[in-house]
Amino acid sequence: MIYHTIVSELKEQILYITINRESKMNALNKQTLEELADAIAFAGNSNEVRGVLLTGSGEKAFVAGADISEFSAYTTEQGEALARNGHTHVFNAIENCPKPIVAAINGFALGGGLELAMACHIRVASDHAKLGLPEVTLGLIPGYGGTQRLTQLVGKGKAIEMITTADMITAEMAEKMGLVNYVVPQTELIAKAEEILNKIKQRAPLAVASAIRAVNANLHKDEDGFEIEIEEFGKCFNTSDFKEGTTAFLEKRKAVFSGK
Image 1: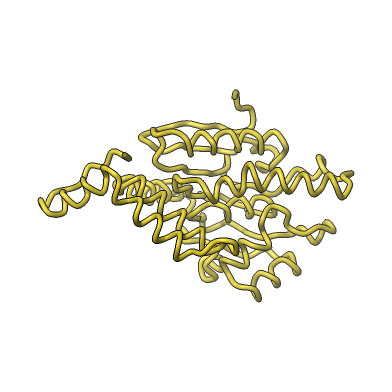
Image 2: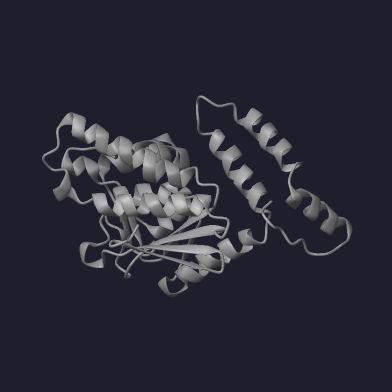
């Protein structure tokens, strides 16, 4: 797929995905979601990719929300389809991607933008970032998993407060609440995200994927997280990386993992 609203670049096993609609505050429109779905699918299936860094172009916005003009006249059925397609192909695909995805939040992360960041496995925010779910000011609620993921990250009380008041919070407050992992100056944002991914790159890729799968199972009511952990633990024993990791430990050297 040829991308028109995102930029995707693979460097040193990290796939850099930049939402490239700076004049529109990187708002999510249908085309952007389709291109994100394609890029995330590539990341999950490519042996060349060890991690993903997701950000927005410019310094004003990560993603300032969805493109309201595209759905302002939707019916109930169209609205449900919009949310369901987004869940399946983008937001859930990000959460369930076997490669770690780090969101570098470089400004406003509002509505669908915050939902996009929350779907990522790790979040780093610039110190001037502002985060919020303002959908109730439009007569809507978050439709891309925001009610669920925000509750998982910050708890029921804070989630209901943020969603029903539609208030934005600062990056500092988001860090205190557990909504983001780190807050850094804007000039250090990408470097911090890269630091995390470069550390993960040194670990066994299949074990990293198993860890993501097991942690996510805790959030799914139809799965037994302990059972998934046991299964994923067992699978690791049948990998070359397990043999390399244990051999390197016993030989007191650094392991070199192949992802096999």
